[in-house]
Image 1: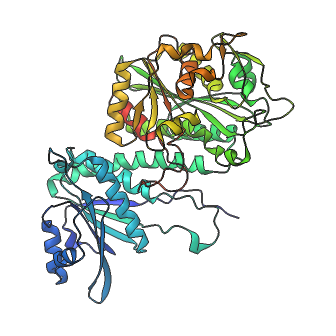
Image 2: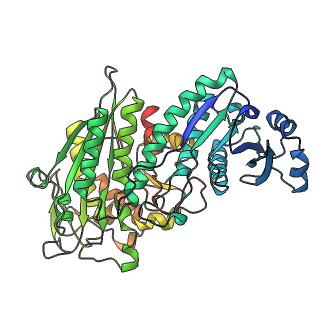
Image 3: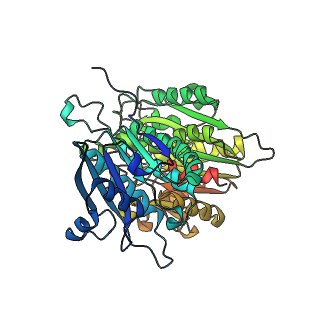
Length: 511
């Protein structure tokens, strides 16, 4: 069976011609709640000789967020569709949250696809309505539509079960806004492709994406973009004293590796930030075996690594004025006669030791080596790790907010601002020292699971990681709840979300 390996992408073009001049399958409009009929829609009504306003009134369309109105129209004996989607109500400042715009645009794409239209044209609302500039609006438009367009169906052979792909979107703006919107769309396309590539990797069957396979993909990206690439093999991992990464991969026939990607800006004396992503390409739990049901989606346990690698690809094209290091420790966590056992004691890269009480708490073991190695070798000004680390975080925050833990208020503020700009949302949890003793062991420096009396498994896991960052300003992102199967979000579908990619790119671009 020949598989489609390229993600179908929506082609977006920008024009300063009016929507009434476009030859397209669908004509689309976005209307805020309580707003007057847009002038372009009035001109459109005149072209088609119909009073759409009366139809909206009859169907009690008010412009609530994601409220949808669709009407077939005919021009020269050819049927087209008018699709109108609500943007929701403006806030007290008379501005609409940019996240409402993202969701409305994504929902609009899916409505167009449901009509099996080959193309659609959209009159872009004023950027002032959302409190952003025109370039940013173009970027968010491209990201939202392309994320909505992504689907994982390359292993489905029945044509009637494959998702319909809309080929073209034309964005209609004024001539003075055209150039800025085009720049934004270009950047947004780079970001969306990074998000969607991460989603595809996460969705792939684990037999198709082993640690070495993922490392090879990172190598190909580096060759294409000019990033510096390094991959440590198992012998090098052991020789460098990375006992955590070696221990987790010990039960698998697949070789573990650690990928390092480096982007260096041309700006002199630029700061350096580092992103470290957990890359367990399949997590069975090891000898502390998961129940079968809990294993079904464990191909997603490399979501952090996917986010870091694709973020680096995007940054190589967007070229921020900051040096960025991307590190991804990669392994499979499987049971065998060679697997790490509960009761084993591991020595990590920085010399600290940990007692293993549960082999299913493996993510922190590979991150411990990656964090301590990154801190020592690259001496970054800030370091952020991203990992599907604890089910406790999913229960605490659900699928809509990534857990954020750090004792560096300035770094937290930077991440929260990036989350606000992108919609890749975070929520800070208290990394207080009162939780520190939860991961103390009686026979080693640390224990890889927190003491039950402290509860708060997400926070105690972060305290384990904190022992490996030294004095480097550091933040931990737990994406266990946000990486996969997020419901009721127009720009997502079943499966991987690519969470963290937009956040990390924005952080680097605004550092």
